[in-house]
Amino acid sequence: MIIRASGISKRFGKLEVLKGISLEVAEGEVLCIIGPSGSGKSTLLRCLNRLEKIHDGNITILEEDIVNTKNINALRQNIGMVFQSFNLFPNYTVLENMVLAPLELKKMTRKEAEEKAIALLKKVGLEDKKDVYPHTLSGGQKQRVAIARALEMNPKIMLFDEPTSALDPEMVEEVLKVMKDLAQEGMTMVIVTHEMGFARDVADRVIFMDEGFIVEEGTAEQVFSAPKSSRCQDFLSKVLSAR
Amino acid sequence: MIHYFQLFQECLPSLLNGLSVTIIMAVFSIFLAFILGVILGIFSISDFKVLRVISNTYIYIVRGIPLMILGLFLYFGVGAVLDIRFNPLVAAIIALTINASAYMAEIFRGGIQAIDIGQTEAARSLGLGYLKTMHKVILPQAIKIMIPAFLNQFITTLKDTSILSVISVRELTLNGQIIIARNYLPFEVYSYVAAMYLVIITMLSLITKKVERRLSYDNKGKRD
Image (cartoon, rainbow over all chains, first blue to last red; front, side, top):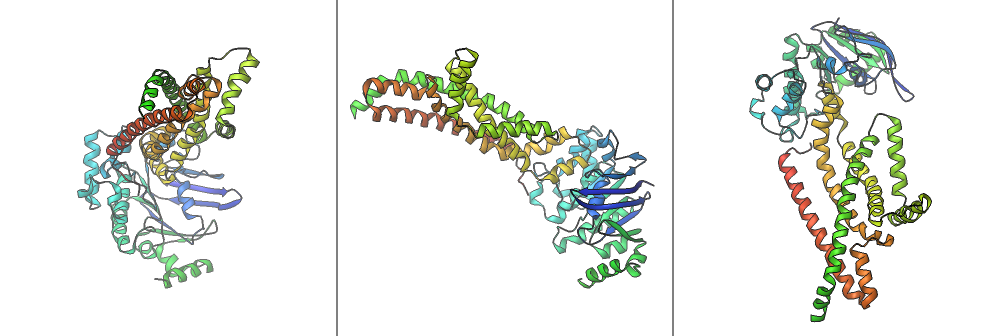
């Protein structure tokens, strides 16, 4: 198991957002986390690379205790993260965004880093954008660059925090396609998403969360076609009928 | 009119002396206040509560005290208790530094906090440490936001030097007052003084505009 979390609890002040969550992800597995907003799914994802500190429980990533590790920066290099709001660095070009971390961390020479970056940009269909600044890109292009930037570090795990929620509808597909390709290549992925069709297509396993608990868990087929809990049925009927 | 310019020539040597003291005061206090302000600004965004409390208390106290009182207190009050006679120029620079550093700390803190937290999260999740994140990602963006506010504070501090005439620093304002005490021509003399302030502040603005433009050339990225 490449990710192992057990009994994790997290509070924001008095509000308990995660109430003893346990979760395992195998290498090469694609896990989608769905659920209503406020259910704790983004918080759960952010705990996996310690952007949020947990109050109880433990998390092991790549056999290392991420809660107590002394070397969080080294561990994070193996965990790519893609955010809802892209978070590209506006003061750097696309290429500079991508090579910044590997060069600063002395993981690659400039030549290696740039070659890899250009190959990745080609893969996400944006090699002609390497020298532009992020503000000239559309939302979908920004998110594809953000994915490429995360991949540049050769991560073993990719975390996606609602990667298409801030996009205009016509740009959602181009980002999902990049993610689909990535899944087919065998990347371990944990994806918080509202794209039910995508989750159904790509996920090996789906988790439905509500009010800080994992309410339902199973293959995409099980969760979407035959949800056991009434809360999950209710949620799915709402989001699917809205489409 | 001829009289006006003749009088100006007569006053000029004394006013230039005053101006040079004003500039010395401004340069030293702006420089020292900038360093102190950045340190206090770093304290105020620190994860350590003690440092935040120190910085916030300092800013709270200094912002609540008029510069003139601070100068009088240092020069007369502290001088009397410690039984030393401050050099008025030194006391003035200390007072200005204390005053301006509080505002500069706020400018620094505001600039850093104006950058979206997502920038830090993105950099940290790539594996960059806190210092590298600050240096490579946050500061380059924050500095652009801070610069106009810092420049504004530099100009304010330059003008504030005139307040320290109350502790007998022989700067531009006080030298003007001394001339007026002799010739009873406040209209003329204060107009010279005002014009000289205007000239150096214009010069400072021009320099800073240039710096601002330079930095924005180096840094074409806009915030999205």
